[in-house]
Image 1 (cartoon, rainbow, N blue to C red):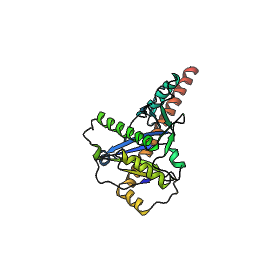
Image 2 (image 1 turned 30 degrees about the vertical axis):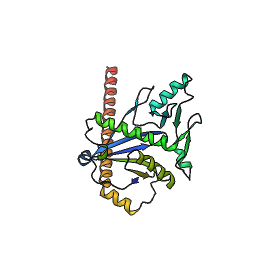
Image 3 (image 1 turned 90 degrees about the horizontal axis):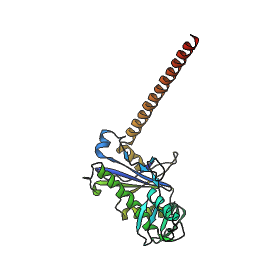
Image 4 (image 1 turned 180 degrees about the vertical axis):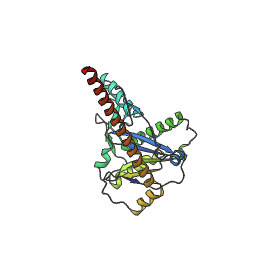
Length: 252
């Protein structure tokens, strides 16, 4: 569940899920929402050296020996593995699961440093903002490939999710890292279904059509389950019929 200040009439809303272990993004145009609120787009990432696709990529980032951003996600993971196999990784900076460093710290100075895989240090603001920048630019390239490159970054509501249980200092740090790269605002969320919400949150939910969205999602799920059950019943009837036919031939 989440709430945030609403920016009026964007052409597209893009949400970045910057997770502890995996990250990804989703987006929806205003036209898609009006036609079908369930039409939400994402990106299927390759799983690197392993065959397959995933809606998220590992939250890891790689910087070269000059401390310049090199890659993020599975590409960073595969590149660092390749460097390590060649024993040429010592001067590179490889970070993973670094997001939790903000959760663990109650006081977060703006010059907070993060340790990489080998204990080398880089500014946390640099590591996080470069990661967010990668996700934003990747999404823009995805839009371009879909023929939606006419949408300018200023016509997009950029949203970054941050756990509600984080300290105010950690949330503010993420806001600054996000705004540094052009994101509009940060959404806080909680996984607790018993959590209470302010009247502002409920007002936002009502105004943005979330109740209708949930009703339609529920109906879609029921219809999908009915179709699945119907398919199972047909399959069982077919198996039973085949079994009866086999028995009849055997009897003859």
